[in-house]
Image (cartoon, rainbow, N blue to C red):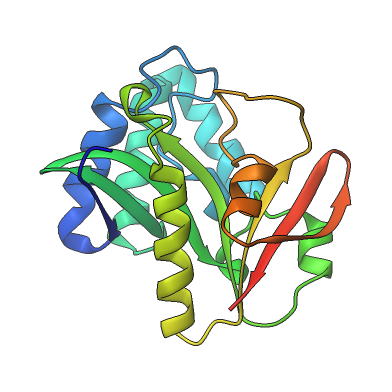
Length: 195
């Protein structure tokens, strides 16, 4: 494996975050892009307002503008992976209560206490399959425990086989890290690790 370093997103890494989404994320014609991972922390009204601006400013430029504002306000939380000084992957992970979207309602109904949610991964195409998602999960669990959280969870889709465009991570990824299935609904499963 390449020497990959996982770092929590801090103000001094905002430029690296934007550089990743500007230049390496979704470069394989992934249908989830362009994206700057703003939607998990936005309510429906804000998302609708943002989408209306797509026609005026373009999708990527609009998303970037919202991301810059949200970064300044410390709303976007998560981790970047680096190969040297170059950001090559992103994982959106934060307190379950900070998310307005992407955390299914049945997960909120099954909350077990102070919980970190992992809502998405985006890894540059040339860096996939070398263990970065697992490294993210390991770091998130370590940091969550140090901060007094009692659980970390992700929301995997119940699908057979590998899906290159699955931004939530497969069930097997979470099982490998010691997560257990808590509940499932509509093809999605809560995978939780008690800390």
